[in-house]
Length: 180
Image (cartoon, rainbow, N blue to C red; front, side, top):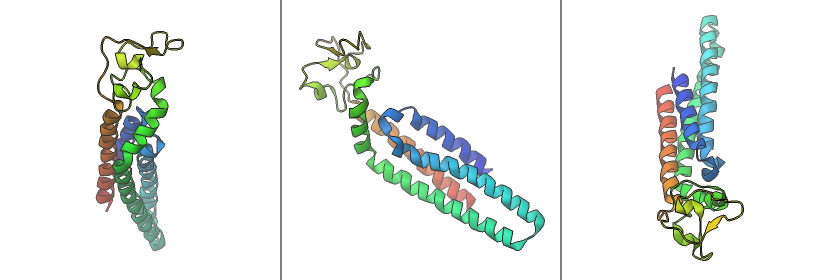
């Protein structure tokens, strides 16, 4: 049962991280992917354990027990990994966002830190104005906006990614505790 719950929870968390995959980078998704794989492995180990109890071979029961211990260790390691990524996510987001930001519109935010990111160019992208890509291929920037989003996108995604990684870490911790 814990594997089924872990499968559902990790799949849901992976989906939530996948939504902003362009900004978060793949290293943020790895702990959730590992949890999803551990759910599948746990189902397999549970099936092996169920089959071995019927055969009453002691070596199979010992191997199943060792596999369960290994699963718990990997799940707890996933907790630690997610917390390490959680602590360093702000650097990853700023680098990934800077590379992808020119292609994105409609986030109701402007630049990495705010509209001041575009002071050197003298104009801001249409996405900062809330206008959308008005002929974005030929004129990707607007010289004058009636209203510019003042908040930067990095802090919004930073908070979101930390929240999702905390959920992944807690799910991994709960799964390892439950299986112990």
